[in-house]
Length: 381
Image (cartoon, rainbow, N blue to C red; front, side, top):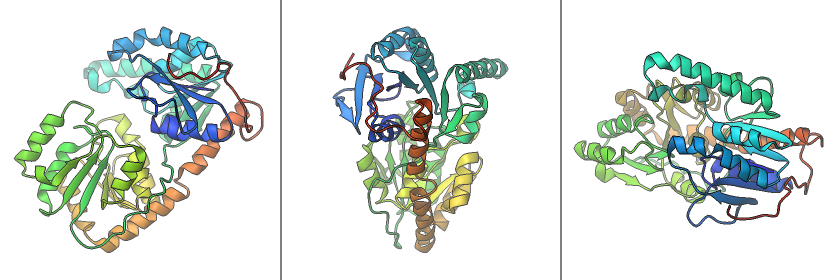
């Protein structure tokens, strides 16, 4: 089978390290065709990686759809599992026996922040029609979050974006200065202005570790604001880390932060990987009270505090409450137990394998040592 991506990296966590690895472990021959990256290995987690030159900009991605379909068709895969709207269309044009589309985000609202208010309803209508059309032509629709399924019809199968256990010992919470943790992409819309303000409002010995990249070009502004608030010396920027290093960093921190700001539908429906990563590390989370799925997960697991993340004072107050090592230990233990159980990746991997078993007519699970590729492996295209 072929995992197809127009924009995700070759060794993407959800696509390769979770979904692809789960299917490869069940015996499927799995390839991931994605934009090439420097020093891309030939294989990760049992998934062969294939690269193509990355197109520039959104228009470049649109122009690349036909080329991507030809590359996908050349692999001879019976099943193509595509991961963005342009790769969905490219996969459909490649005419595989079975087409699976994977929905990571709420795409009907994806253009909201790029359009004037009067144009947004028409754009949402058009994008929703496209999503429904792709849901109709696909043999299955895999959705990362419950709130996404409504736009794709009855073929939707939830495979939530929970994390797999990295095998790192969780944080042992003790009294003392706190280290806050922000994992993954960071931007203004993900709350760094509120985070810096909250850091300045709290104890002077509280530190902040950030593992991820700035996705909106605001790193210079972040550093300038950190300097203005006199908190720059308490911040460590680690960049994007491999999963093992990220898990090790998380286990040295005290509080996980999910600070998506209100105003975007994708933020309301978010179910970020960083939430599960922090739970596995035994960290309590401070999370947005408006984010439907995040809030439901935090409440059910009793693993953190839900606050108005647009208010730095509310974030700072939550940090002060979590200065109690006993409270951190209880909430962190609850989150870890949930992430190893009902909110863990194991059950989601089984759901994905069950879907493929049904698609291939083999029963509830994919067959061992099944091959869905018609071409020999190759590294680059």
